[in-house]
Image: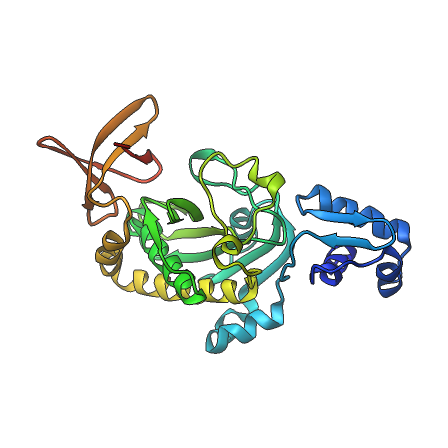
Length: 327
C-alpha cells in the first residue's frame, strides 16, 4: 500500500488527525504528510485542515480490502481469488483488463476494481465522474465461444443483475433506463459500459464496466451534467464499498453464467418490468436527428421499440440518447 493510501486509511474514520501523529505512525516527516494530503485533496477528496487539530475528511469512507472482499464472496471466493485485481489507481478498469488478461485462457469472472480511476468512460464518449476512494469502479471479463452477435442484450441483462445487487445492499425504489443506466428518483445512481472484442465467428471477449455513485464530492459534482444521486444521499450512511463490491461481483457472475447458457431471453421480461420509461412518451436523439414516440418495450436482442402513430422502430444501444417528453 502506498504512503498516500496509508494516510487515507488512518484518516478514513472522518476524525481529525495531526500531521505529527500521522508522520509518527507511518515513519515519515510532517512535510511528507502535508505533501501526500495535498495530493489527496487534488484528486477530488474534500479534506479540512485546521491549525492545532490537523486534517479531517469531509466524510468518512471505507477503503477496499482484499481479504474482506474474499470473505464476503463466500463460496465464490475460491473461483475468483486469483482473478481479483485490486488497484489503488488506474486509467480505466475496462482498459486494464483488456491489456492485462486478454491472453489468459481462463479469463471468465476476472475482476478489476480501483480506488481511483483517472480516465473513466461513460456512454457515447462521456467521462465518468467519480470521487476517488468513495465510489465503485469495477470491471468483469468473460469470453464467449461465439461471435459478437450472440452477446446482444448483455448490457441490459447486466442492468438487471446490478439492480439486484443494489436491492440486496438495501436500496429500494431504483429502476432501469435503457440501455445502461440505473436511476433512483429519476436521478442517475449507476451506469454500465460494455466493450466487445471478437471476430464474426468468435470467440468474443466482453469486458463489462460498472460505476456506482457511493459519494460524490461537491467539486466533482460540478462536472456532472445530468441529475445524479449517490448511495450516501439515499441511505444517509457511509457506503460499505467492500460489501457493495462483493454483491455486484456475485450477481454479475450469476448473470454471465446464465447468459452464456441461455442468452438474453431469461432477462427480457424482468428488464421490461423494471424499465422506468416503459409506456411513456420519449425522445431519442441520434446525432442531429430526433425521434419521438412511446416506449413499448424491447425486442429479443435488447433493442428499444418505439411507436409513433402506426410506425414502430427499433433502436440499438450505443446509437441514441433517451429522454422523457415532458408534458
